[in-house]
Image (tube, rainbow, N blue to C red; front, top):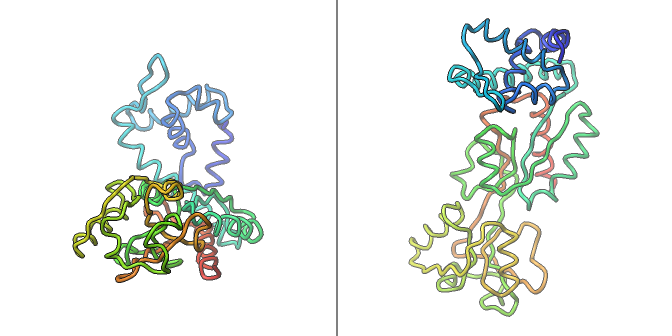
Length: 308
């Protein structure tokens, strides 16, 4: 980004933010003036001038030079999160200005559960491309706990994830309710019936996620309430691992069977008395500003949830 490019960027952003602050964020991210220049495809001298200009304007050093690059000063570290928010807000403002002219534009980052990827990823990408060519979609697949963390950190605009009960849905939009099933090899009791009462789980060799997983905490709490003994044979934190262990006959897993009954050699029985329900929720990050593009992607996901 040359000096003229900085001025063009400021003009494009309706002069709400000095483009040099973007350079400050990039230098802080990579820890080097030369690396930041290489990433941006610009001369190092331009990066150095931009940082020097900011330091003169602030009256404080933003970086300390070391033999390996630069390190953010205490003053710079105080500014860093606020500048990051300002840059995000400036981008959101520009996108909203463009969207107000009828064309949503910008990046939207969406997290998906592995079990939701097949259901949403393709249809969402196809509709975004057809209806919003100015929007660049980023899809991230991860477990529900990681998606929750990414939302809190502001690394995602929104995510399709699991919430354990109605009280935990919060401001999220419920896309579906899914029951919990006991799954295992078809030669294992009590999988010979379409449903299995919760009390029948007592003493069975179970395959469950390790603490502090929210599902594990919920099952522990219910076991205490109903006087059950949950015997955990294997701890496995991903659904894929739980399926693999159950298919090998090493235990019985408790999972949401979103796509129907598993194929042989696995069989599934829905847990009842009481029925255990989880919620597939579309949640948004509180750390990222809503833009015209993110609102439209949110709308599409809600429509796809209704159509499924």
